[in-house]
Image (cartoon, rainbow, N blue to C red; front, side):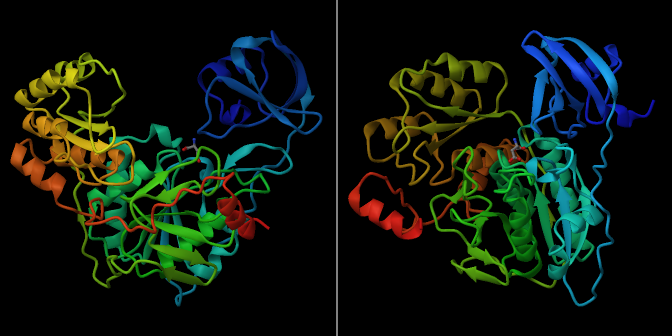
Length: 461
Ligand code: ASP
C-alpha cells in the first residue's frame, strides 16, 4: 500500500487509520465520543500533529477529529482529488540576481489546496513559481528544504545547520538568501543567525506568514515577494526579518535580526522593531531605507560562520515573590548561564540575592535584561541594582531578553572565561546593543483617547 494513503499521518493518527482500514481520500463516517461525522479524510502537512484526523465535511469545512475520541471509522469509498500544484519550470535569466530560498517549515511552507482543503507543502521552485509567478520577475530562485518543522521545534541543530547552509551559499556566489520560517520563533532564529553568520556580504532575509495561503487575508505571497525582492536587490547585508508592515498590504518592513520581536499572536503586522525604527520599507519596486547605519552589500564572498553554542543557558522571567529555588535548581542542574528578564530597570527581589551569589560562586554567568523590552538596564540608579552587580550580575544594556539568551549560548560555546564571556556579551556584534533608542521608535497608541482615535481614523478608512 503506498505511503500516500497515509500522507502526513504518523504516530497515533496513523495507528487509528490503520486500525479501521481507512486512509487519505476515504469517504467515511467517523463515530466518536463527540458525535458522528461524515466526510473525506484529507492529507495532512508533514508539520502537523499526530493527534488528529482531518476530515472535509460536506458543507466544505475541514474539521480535526481527536484520535482519542474515535470509536469507529466506516469507509464507503474513495474520493480522490488532485492536490499537486502545477510544476512550472522556474525561468533562468542571466541578467537577474540569484537568490536561494531555504525552507525550515512553519505556515509559509504549506498551502491549502482550494479544491480539497488539504494543507500541502509547496516548496520546490516549480511549485513556488506555480503559486507565486511574480517571483520570476524578481530573480532566479533556487530552493532547498532544510527542515519541515513548526518553529517551536527549531533548536541548536537547526540553527547551526542553517548557518552552515548560508555560509555555503555565500561562498557559491549567491546574491541574496531568503529563509522561510515559522513566525513564532523567527526572532529567536534571526538573533542566533546574526551571531553565527558574521559580516555577510549579501542580505539574509527571514520570512514567514501569519495566515496560510488558503485564506483570502493571507500574507504568505506578499511577504515572500517582499523578502525575495529585499534579498535580491537591497543593499543591506545583514540578517533581517521581512514581514507585513502596516495593517494594509502596502509594504513590508525589514527589521534587524537582533532588534525584532513577534508582538501579536494573530495580526499579520505582528513583527516590530524594538528599541529602534525598522531598517527599511519594502514595496513592489522599491526599497526605502529608513536607517543608514546598516552593513552594505559587498562583492566579495567572505563570511565568518561561527556556530559555537552552549545550550546550558536559561531565561528567567522574574515575577514578584519568585523564590530562590528557581535559581538554585538551574545551578544544581548544571546550567552555565542565566539571562534574567528583570522588572523596571533590571530588578529582582532580595530573597533571590543569596541564590545569585551562589550562582556566581559556582561559575554561572548571570546577565540582566528588562521585561519592558524598550529601554536600558540601569543598575546604578537604585541600591538594589548596585547590590546585584556586587553579586556578579552583569547588565546587558538594551539587548532583548531572547537576544541576550542567544548571545550567551553563543558566547559560552566559545569560552567559559568570565572576562572573555563578558567582553563578547558587552561588545555589539550585530546591532543588539545600541547607544541610544530613538524617541520615534517607541510609540504605543491607546485607543479610546480622542486625539488617538482621530489619528487612527485617518488611516483606517
Ligand atoms: N506555529 C507556526 C510556527 O511558528 C506559526 C507560523 O508559521 O506562523 O511554525
